[in-house]
Image 1 (cartoon, rainbow, N blue to C red):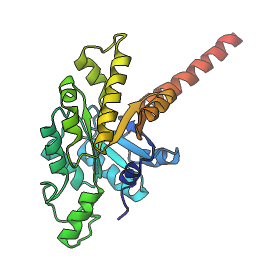
Image 2: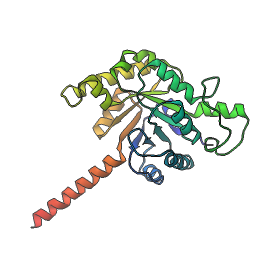
Image 3: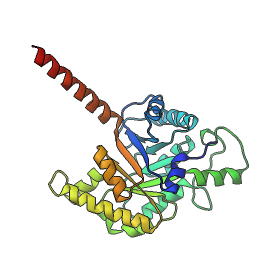
Image 4: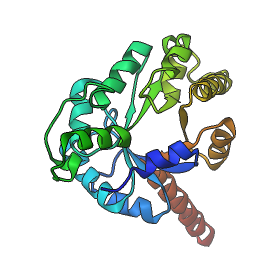
Length: 262
């Protein structure tokens, strides 16, 4: 089985660029994104209509392509984490983690004993349908999984250092829109500076406790800014946003050309 390139790059501190997949449900989109030069795809199940069957199909192709796929479940509970890991998803991006206790529960659900309490399920997509000694399987799975948690509330930032210290959490990030909403600055002139301040606080806590930092942005300048802050896992835009902006700019240019001719 291939190693988890997403985790390997994160551990080395290498910058990797990916994108949200929020609309295109055919697994072949992963082939396209890899051909475009991206280094991972992040599938959104919290705000998008993806089913577990679709995500399982995408995970199988991602492993075959050796193109890392990250999944944001609707919730970081035992049901979703177990089903996604057993479907062969190696990387999780868990939303709405507000306390170190929640972070510890997420970490425990993602790893087998003695590191956690992940439910045991013989062989399947998560083992490439291979059978192997149970101890070998447990150790390999524990080493392969990568877990990012999202801090999206004022409450989470009151316990930031405790959350960042939780073993088994590999990376930290913010949910910028939900965080801005919770802080009361969404859509105001204070939003950008407030979020940047929280990003810096998160980076400092992550560095202190040896965690990677993931950030999202929708501009090239934003990518430079996030790297400058210290993020190494960069999510640029989404499939829907890139398609919309690409078509909109082309259609606008065509209409200007037609207008000039008339």
